[in-house]
View 1 (cartoon, helix red, strand yellow):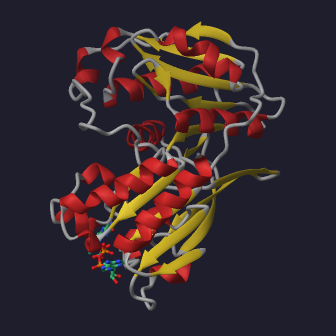
View 2 (view 1 turned 180 degrees about the horizontal axis):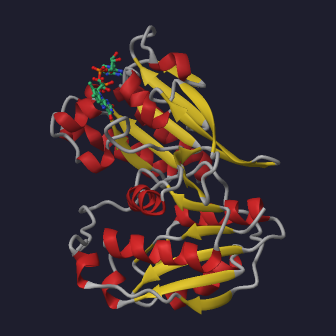
Length: 325
Ligand code: FAD
């Protein structure tokens, strides 16, 4: 098999965690074959050492001030140029909002096959296969890329570990020869506004504490924040809480929100509707707090607490603080 190309997404001068996961997985799959990493931005060269530390043999730099923020057409052109430059068998991208958008554009441009939101990629004698959730996470499909080259896959964040210690690559850097035209910037992000008070993105956090309709109003989300803070996690929410206007949509977990795969997911006052499960069922450990012992969330929870969250959460926070000193 030939080499592997990974698109590494940067924001504010750092490579995002989901990108490091993709680079790490690319390194593992490439074995002794070449792993190339594409970084696009205004000054992407500064990020090359980080990519090399995590396994890049070759770092392809698409450098242009207009690439500082995501521009779908221009990024797709740069990605297609990277594919032409290294002719990989497999092209991996993080299944972030940007990665998903870009992957679909590049697959269409190259006329190749794309498996999105994968939780495993395997190399076999017949080529690569990818495992991905279907029917809102109720089942998994294993898909092959027959006749598609390069095979393309986006990787679900928090599923693929970043190798520790990382396995470095050769780290050669090369500027990508890509001629960007005005029409490549017909749509582009002009600024990224972080929501006030938000530190951790729910999709990237290793611990997520979510609140549902049981919160009854915005003021009670302080309970969820308290538990999230005690654990060093991010705050998530069900759609019921978001639709009621109690918390911003960026916190929504589920089919029409974000897909999360943290090490620990704590669902507080969330019934466990299929659309919510679609966004969190691949979490490694699931804890549910619900006063209804028959709530469907308990069917997928590893640990269940039947009780009133307004009594349970303060007790949990007290115990966590004791343990953490
Ligand atoms: P409820 O179902 O009302 O559950 C509230 C739970 O809180 C109950 O189980 C109750 O026993 C418990 N409770 C109440 N008080 C307490 C207390 N004091 N202590 C402990 N427990 C308590 N939903 C999502 O979450 N994400 C999505 O992305 C999403 N996308 C959707 C897309 C479509 C097309 C559709 C049709 C629906 C979607 N939904 C989504 C909505 C989904 O179907 C459910 O309506 C929603 O998840 C319910 O939210 P909930 O569990 O917070 O509320």
